[in-house]
Image (cartoon, rainbow, N blue to C red; front, side, top):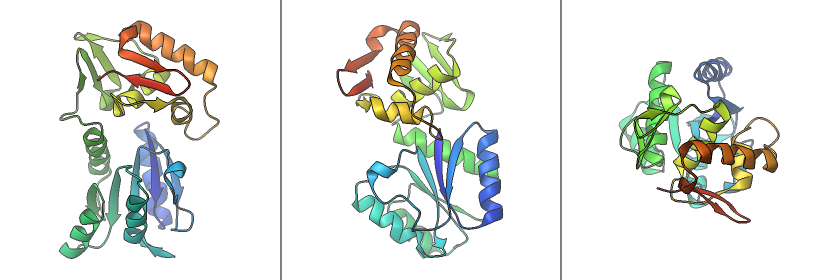
Length: 218
């Protein structure tokens, strides 16, 4: 999982990155509107944590521009604004959730998992795709109730495909998501991981769309 954090407070930003790291979640940190992504092509993140009060602009205006541009990435607003009208404006403006400062880190982590679960169209912590079950919080996957022995890279690959089950995920997007803070995974290595994953979950569950990418059958 890879998070984009847009927050100008140095202490809070550092604390959030450390808390996410403990949970095995990578993150990028931007501190103002100018440095935030502006187009869909610039966002390869699973979720955004967005402060509303930024030094060079308003986070709510940025969110509105994202939604108009077609950016559908889940967004959790983090703010000290406690008025009801601010919460309603955030949610009506395209936010997926709203959390007030100060907040407990475990609650934030739980909210991140909840919005990602909804984005993947899953009703509970256990993601179910036929006989395949995925438990992101425990980094476990089961097939016909038997635990699968997946490498960390294989599990991450399965999770990325499951987020968009039934839809094609571009090979280039998968390569970048597997190494969000570094160079994209080599396509040859990606194909090896796909082959290994197919062997463990069943070849028929992952469809190759030649020249485009892969799709996990939903």
